[in-house]
Image (cartoon, rainbow, N blue to C red; front, side, top):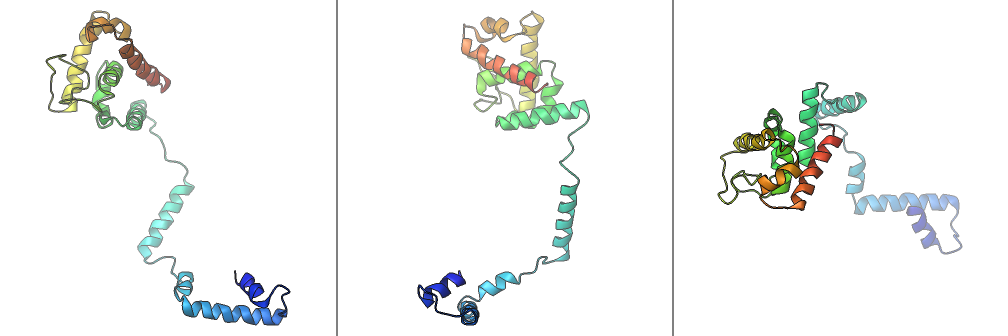
Length: 196
């Protein structure tokens, strides 16, 4: 920038000699530092304000050198980790209740039906994400209690041989709703792709 300024001040044919250009650059730099003293301060800031900050930076560098974070090796921990991240990606409040979900034998259907009924609990009343109770909508004090009851309700259908959305549709929903089947199967397929 200073070179451009010198060129502009000296005219188009640049009549200043090299020593004159050098002296002009020094003079303009001194003027710049006088008018804008913070420019010189920006160059002299200490890298580490405290020993603690230096230590934190050292640990961060060591962590970077160690490679990416290790994923859980245990199958159950991997399942929890994967399912929680999946539910977080869906902005589902069920992400905080993954352990309770996985304790249920029909957890995949619980999730799939919650998607069809309440967009994975984003639109629910009284923690009831499954439409349990129909017109007499049940309310629960917590998601954990709702999940346990949803498993009981879904187990009744599964025990009668209705273990797919298509088979559950007429009795669970009460009418022919192909959108419900599509939404439920969509989640079951996603869970299968995640190898859950």
